[in-house]
Length: 531
Image 1 (cartoon, rainbow, N blue to C red):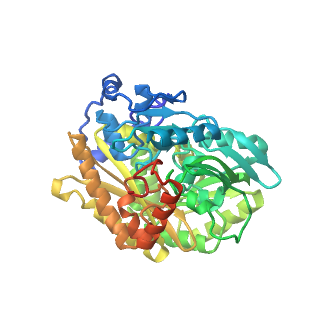
Image 2 (image 1 turned 90 degrees about the vertical axis):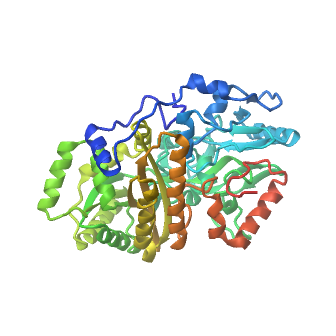
């Protein structure tokens, strides 16, 4: 069963060893745990529903609570404190296009606002209801999770949009195929959510981003159904798929998607590679990307993330052994870890591995260590559970991410880290901040910044501190010409900054499309666009 007030399944935890707790206390101070709100005390706060009865809609308080928030830091503070704020007035679980069409008609007749809901994994407010005079209906697509058609000759599959990552892969694997889209939220996020937010999987360097997978599909809009055929290419005007990608439910509800597949790889291996410092590692990663070497992942941690990851593992003897070995090899405190992924046919994978290792060696890296890669692979989807543990120990943790050209990668990362590091100076609080290059391209890379600070006694103050850090980081991103979101979408949290990236004309175009498709503003108001 999923947690009602945190990430993931109740039976899964990410323990924080005492050595790790001591490490955090030394850097940012001792955490101050506070008791969480109790579900039985929160449910009575769910207000009466404003929705007219409908056979597809439940107004059960527990269902409404479970769909009220996502997984941003403000969401975590709200759920853990019981200060939820706004609840949807009801939840519907459609099973077909016709069901979704009926719910759109219901919304038109009753002035209800509809929020499309996939796995609820948003970290920027995509699925949060807003205050207003009209009732809010969350449309949960989890019952629409089937593989409808597989075209093995063309390498295309048609799935209903509510399918979760593991279930999608489980339906493809017996046929010898994979989508290969593995975001950190893979365990719970859905195909429709990936499309709506322009998601990127951890191995996107090999498999591609979701826009590379999305070949077509079916969208239910307030003005009628939209079908997008899976053409291999077309010069027939602008590509409507690109409007649906990243539209965050504002232009319609994706009910099924046609996706491009890959054959299951013969080889899927990961390795750890140590560099003397982040600058050298980044140069090696850029060289591999610009040489076109077909590896599947290049994830380079800076020195602080490298040491923090080892510290939080709690494996003291292993960490000490690794530290002694690296120091003997003359790798000092600035050393950085690259997780290198190799995926594909056996011969091609062997060739990619040799070429990548050659370039790493040219940048004075140690030989690759398979054991580190295995450890990373084992925990790749477990890391989000750490947020639960840290919160319970008195710490708040969040991330920001961007992408810039290679010439700006290191300066932008340094500016973001500096802005966050000093963001709470006026409060007397310290912040632990670290980074990694999470996705790379020939022309640039995505930088993923993680920051941790102590919770305040008042959850509203914790959120206030988070906003200070988030704002400082975003200003640094914009100053360096970075995107406000490389892989998490816009939602509520990034919406105030979208105009800085799209410009006045771009915002006008997006608004005009939204108004033409949803003239009454029924779909997911306030997300992506303020209007």
